[in-house]
Image (cartoon, rainbow, N blue to C red):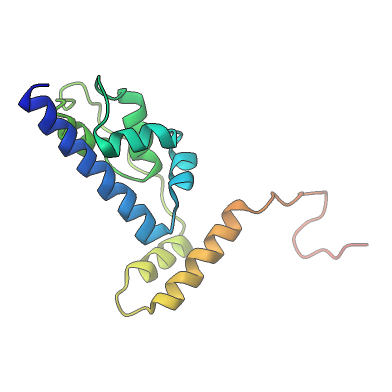
Length: 146
């Protein structure tokens, strides 16, 4: 293996380790949850962490991993030594965010907010995100059930 290939493996493994550490620390995601959210198997992620791959990772998997974690794939591409800036299209602006969601995100990054409160915010968000969809039925908001 060439020195350059080895350096790229180490750089990408470091990128993946940091991304996983951030997901664990800020979102309390396990390796299984990261795999579920990104669509990249745990085995593949573990190979990336170890730098145990014979050929470069597939670009689509790298992008899926980054997007699932809310990261810019350009950082992963840079770690891999890929020049993707020439073929990159300008990303469309993100849709406007709900003001309540913005308020929650501000509380999660505010150093004055206690860890206990941040934990409760995350748990509530997780509950709401994964609960079964409520049937809409024919009732309108505020109508009582018969």
